[in-house]
Length: 390
Ligand SMILES: Nc1ncnc2c1ncn2[C@@H]1O[C@H](COP(=O)(O)OP(=O)(O)OP(=O)(O)O)[C@@H](O)[C@H]1O
Ligand SMILES: [Mg+2]
Picture 1 (cartoon, protein in one colour):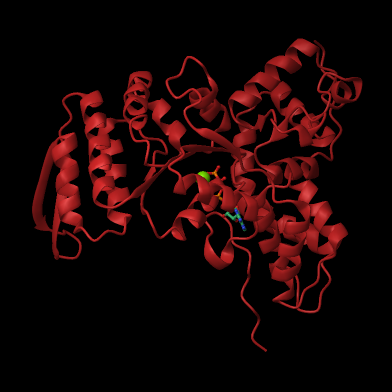
Picture 2: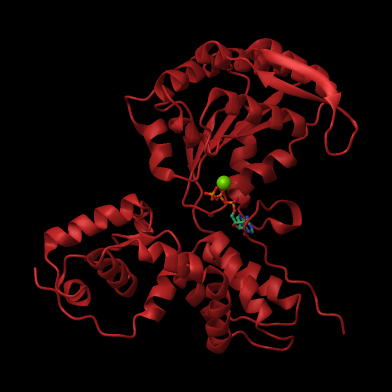
């Protein structure tokens, strides 16, 4: 018998058959796009923001889609390169070269014909010449406006917080906001993986983007939806998972869509047709995940001071609750409150942990960005920690 392929995917955008649930959000987002409403999607990492937008846009036939990814952009030239990439992937009846020539005309630069050094086929390349960043950015938005007049557009700016890394980011954001506000018929969708930075852009009254888009929260899949997804996916390989077990792994992984897929992919690998997924499978699947991630965890840990490491381990074990309480302090080797505070600040800054925004988190003050790292730390902690003298 041929074994069915693993149905769980992670680490990339999912759409179509791979995209599950989120019916209400899909409907809402579709409505906003139709009416030209700007939307900003907030959510924890790997929760499914980009997939949601791609899923909705891929089914939206009335508008052409222009997507930009601003992850880690450092210069205006790089923004132009991302715009070129977005334009290249756009479906349009206007030939690519013509669209790119229009872009270059607006933002400044040259387009050169030549041969591709790898394939030897005819090709062309673009060299931006930026004299004034604000003028070039304005040119980019002129291009968007012009394209929209030819064919209705929806624009998706992903990893939008990446713009904060540019020199003079505030004036550039101001220039962008200045143009977008006149594009009432073009829906602009914004998403980003660093919530704190996205809040800075959209929720801070000092920022030009303050309240400029309707916020939508992309949270965990509702449990019923999620349990159904797991049941169906495991059953394609004749494996069974009961609801109680689904609930257990869901909580273990903070209900994170991407991490659940990652864990389930491993559970699939360590199980056989006919199996009911249980604790043994869970242990083996975690080992499998850690096998590839361990060098990375260890390298990150080596950069921590003794106190930071103790605080991190205590957070892992106590679930991030009451970090100044007696239980926590004991686990951290009786370090004083000010040392704990300093360590927490540092761990937060270095993106080991964050303070969850959702009310479902209850009394949990800190969470790990990577739940598998947290579980790995718990597994490491078999040696009792001697107390420190403050
Ligand atoms: N609707 C969905 N159905 C099934 N799996 C999903 C869904 N949404 C997200 N996922 C899973 O989560 C992973 C991350 O999705 P995606 O990249 O869309 O999240 P994101 O919120 O944009 O992440 P980041 O904050 O890192 O940009 C996907 O690779 C997939 O495994
Ligand atoms: Mg994303």
